[in-house]
Image (tube, rainbow, N blue to C red; front, side, top):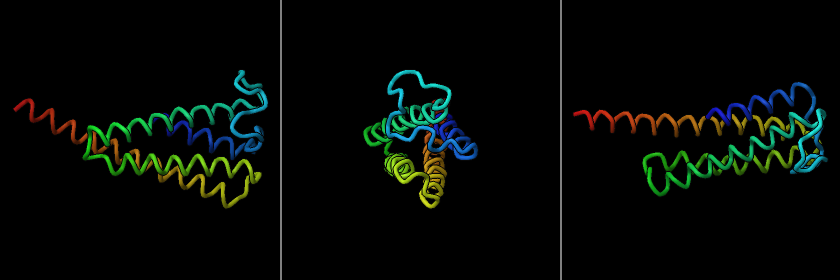
Length: 136
């Protein structure tokens, strides 16, 4: 959740500071895998954190399918939404910040946050209930 929130904050900062096309190529900035120059820094970090966050969400969905069936629906929904979110991010860059796509990218991020929050709260409630059973 913290990773996703940080990705969202960085994305909003990039949009508000008009740096959305500071890194016009996708998926890498002109420096490639090297440490980015100051011009590309925030966009580069946003993309790297988005990839890490997507990995965590996909891992959570995979784990929930195997072990935590009670949160499977929201975890799998989050993994589908993050896939859509990544595609929207590609389209946002390739269309040079088309306003409707930028707004859709932002609102899909909010939906993704809601799915991960529901997954977290559901798993927390289950874990809390199991610990009470262990005490009794």
